[in-house]
Length: 80
Image 1 (cartoon, rainbow, N blue to C red):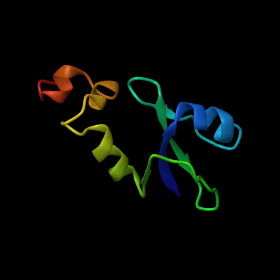
Image 2 (tube, rainbow, N blue to C red; image 1 turned 30 degrees about the vertical axis):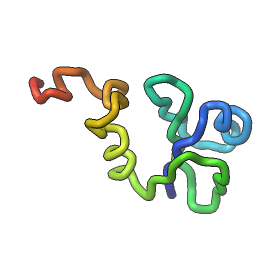
Image 3 (cartoon, rainbow, N blue to C red; image 1 turned 90 degrees about the vertical axis):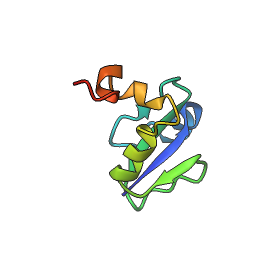
């Protein structure tokens, strides 16, 4: 199993009917992360993640604003 960051258009065009899980869209909605089985091929992707921990490292990268899609500002700042 693996995770792929792909464009939203790539998902709609080539993967929507083949994925068992809904995609997780990025904050701006132009990209999404899909979770696929090992026997499923994704050839046109932006980034590959081997596991959920790798996805979370990308999601919560403090050098980007993507974390705002997954947690509140208070959570991000350790207030909650």
